[in-house]
Image 1 (cartoon, rainbow, N blue to C red):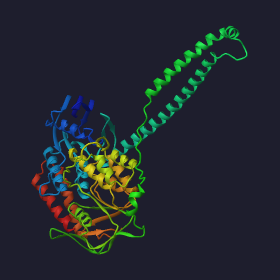
Image 2 (image 1 turned 60 degrees about the horizontal axis):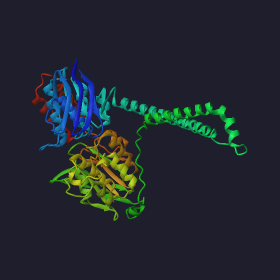
Image 3 (image 1 turned 135 degrees about the vertical axis):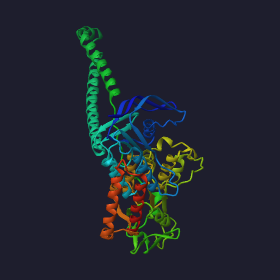
Length: 523
């Protein structure tokens, strides 16, 4: 059964066309992943499918979206009240799923559902979606998540929606093959065009030779002897014109494939010499201690934690474990230990204040950057900030301001970067570019992330907070008692079973989820 049918849909913002769709649909049980760069219209399309009509007067919509069955829409959640973002997201998704009662002719719409979830909550969501009979449309930049739950990919690119039947990994493989074919075709066209230009030059030179008189004969003799060559000369000239037209036509038809450049950090050495620390030195060495916030112990470590001058580390752990507190206390040098005298710490946090500055984005970045112009241009392009480079900082949107703050930190005069969930407002291309940047970065980095593909992309040490302990070495974790593990798995099984039961009460699901959370906190 076709639950959604889109016909001749066009969306314009002011005078710019955001995207257009001739015909597109979602069928029962289909799991669709909606991807694309930031700003291409993913959320707008989802709201149209959900029947949300609260658009600005600048948005002009033509065409139709027909719906059959029930829809349940979970937007991006910003206000978590007194709960963590992950807890609020999980509860809202549970409520939306319960409303649909797992009907086969229902559609669940999720806008960036993984951005606030830790690894355990993400596993819960994956199992939930896999077990649903209802269809799903999911906006996400989490590549590992998309690959596990989606059987169809929609990609908004250049104002069109590319559709692909298969997993995200298969979609990416298909796109790479298409790019390779396009590059091969372009190279063949370039060779053919060069051949035409060579032939054109030969014809042109030949045509000119008919108009040149040899020095040893008179003009009258040359004219009488060349009369028989006039037809040949005219043919050569006509051929030259035909070749010229072909060259012009083929040049216009050639489309150079887009090539994503890898970030190459050609550093401005004059700005970086005073940041250099001996590779044998420790940038940071923390004594064994407890991490406390609001008079409550979050976790502890009973062995010294050290970070060398060029070391990268990625820190994971469930929501509320203390990851952000840990980074903040390092930034403020509140933890006891050794901080290298030359240590300059750059700290990226999602909790930023709207900046009031008349400076343009580019002026602000270049004023503090330790990298050369080429590297800065590449970073701004990867974060989709290059078109905004002459815009004043105080006029940036919230998402643009987060990306600007990230660019300001990673290009700044620091030799230790603390990055707290830097991927939350980034699209897939920007996430991959950020991972490449961190891998190439010449100094130390500690990054917090729940994005599995991003974590896997990083060439970094794995640190994790588990059982209220900071674990920085492989095999350091202590397993909880077997009876607690068994009880936890049983409760999760019961909860997942209830989620798929149309007759199950929402209060019963909430109570069971609370018991699981309580037991996980103890474990």
